[in-house]
Image 1 (cartoon, rainbow, N blue to C red):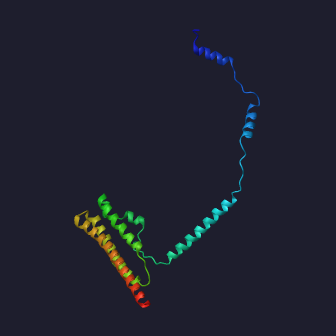
Image 2 (image 1 turned 45 degrees about the vertical axis):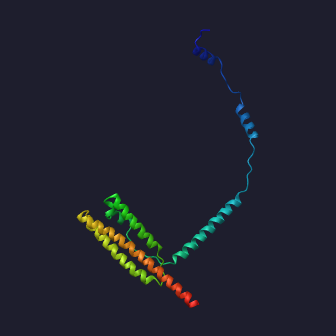
Image 3 (image 1 turned 30 degrees about the vertical axis):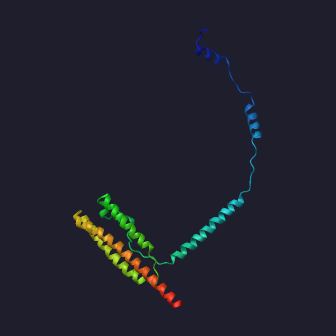
Length: 194
């Protein structure tokens, strides 16, 4: 019994050859097909039609909604492309803190601009404010150029921040005036109807 196990297994392997009987694979596949149930082929064409109808209706409603909002006239304040803005030097490029300040004011200015509702009654008032805003924007670009040419200094950075603050305050003042104008018109309508 002191036989080497490796030799014993090698000898056993050589003696026994395991082969599969002829036709075993075909019999196995046949039994497998018999044991699995056939899947029902349901007609899902009505689901496809319903999904198509939903898509068409939602596209139609979206089109109508955006056409109603397109009647409002829009105001273009900053028509520089993003490539021009990237190549333009800003004081936000000096440090991350200044970048945060600049981003904060620019985001708020853009948000206030987006909230403006232009109507024929308010167009003249809005145009006068937009002219002032455009002048502040031009001054901001001049200050940025000065910052680029002369380098960073406290006076220029403070002037740039104050310019952003003035633009935001100007838009908030415009918003208050538009609200007052709207309220006064509503009061006139109520007084006239009484």
